[in-house]
Amino acid sequence: MSIRLPAGAPGARILGLGGYRPRRRVTNDELAQVMETNDEWIRTRVGIAERRWASEDETLVEMSVAAGGKALAASGLAPDEVDLVILASASLTEPIPGIGPQVAHRLGIPRPGAFDLNAGCAGFCYALEVASSAIRAGSARNALVVGVERLTDVVDKTDRSTAVIFADGAGAAVLGASDEPGIGPVAWGSDGDQFSAIEIAAGTGTMTMAGQAVYRWATTRLTDTLVQAMESAGVEAKDVDVFAPHQANLRIVESMTKRLGFGEDVVVARDIVQSGNTSAASIPLALTALLESGEAKSGDLALVLGYGAGLTFAGQVLVLP
Image (cartoon, rainbow, N blue to C red):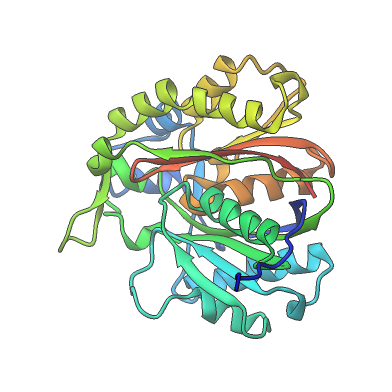
């Protein structure tokens, strides 16, 4: 007697993207009223001009439903065609129950596999790989992946080392089976020897970050991961149309762009300038913005990289929907 396994798909691809940005815009000048900083200091160090902070009614669930609904509409699928929902977030304040099942219910998705995933700012890319693998293994037909954060709940809003950087928002992607793969093999991993570089220590409820250590790690250790993601997908730097790394710091984005040798013909996501660091939401928000502005187009080949607390990282090559 042998166990029978379902037949999977040759590949998976993104069918639709969607995003939600909180209503409140917080400028650098506003932050300068409550902490020792100024617009020039913030722009020079992290490249941020403003960020979005969620209001009380813009909960993790509400933002996820808004972004997920847009992604579903863009995909052309009905809710009952989705059978897997993965919610990536590093800012859940209540461990039980998870919000993945709540978001699925609110979107009218009937009885899907649903769970939350925490891989810090790499969470969206980790969830994308899990969903893609489930589709290729035959465990799911179509999947919804959401990256959502309310980081303003876990930062000290008078601490310039974190409050000027972190922000709120949600981004989502709907994935489906594809004869021609639209999501390349993941290049992922972790450097657990630096686990405390970004953390919420037990009993504090407040995030701390060793900014210089994270900056050095990202600019010196992760270019190889991007190269590995391209090599695994069988593409070269010259084939890439869009580069959308995690929006952690504009200086990191520019450093990676230069190290990879990308020229002006490659569209580079710089959503960090207007949105701040939205952790697991940053990549889908950035890709959605590029498609909506026309800077990127359907069919473009995008290179993405999520990285953050853990320290975790994950890179992939994607075909944009």
